[in-house]
Length: 191
Image (cartoon, rainbow, N blue to C red; front, top):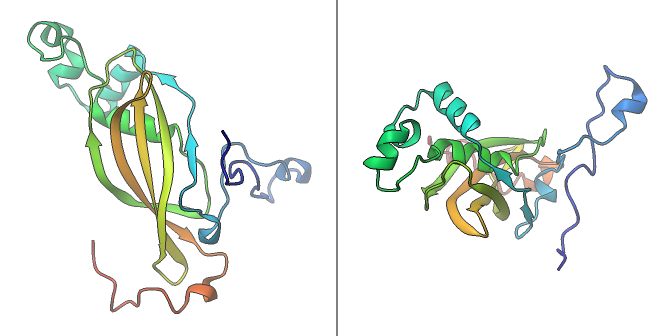
């Protein structure tokens, strides 16, 4: 079953002036260079799957100084924990899950995340994948609009483990087309 949307990844590219021209003309892998006008509500992508190994889970915990017994203490997790085994830290599931569908769009900037929920536990050795769905968009600033996408992280054969919504500001290709729709400075509220 196909999708009614054209592919968006690797279709166009930046053209750096500090590399050979024939190299600069090659599309960049894993990049979207869309503008606000190109962003289509309803468009969905699915990532490859990724098995979370003990070493990377431990390294993440070490980097963020997360030494909670549920993620770092095998004895506690097996004998006193409610799951009977160690968890993967929710922050790592969030980071890895979003990383699976992250692209390198030079026109988009993260604005924040809403509705982040850790729905089910993820354990060392679980395999996850992510589906990103473009939800909606609205003009916001003079040079950029605001887009919203959902991220659903699944494990195994489709068990939902995490949900969040990512807000991004994205540059307009033609700012003048949105001049009458943007929020005026007096209307903009502090977060």
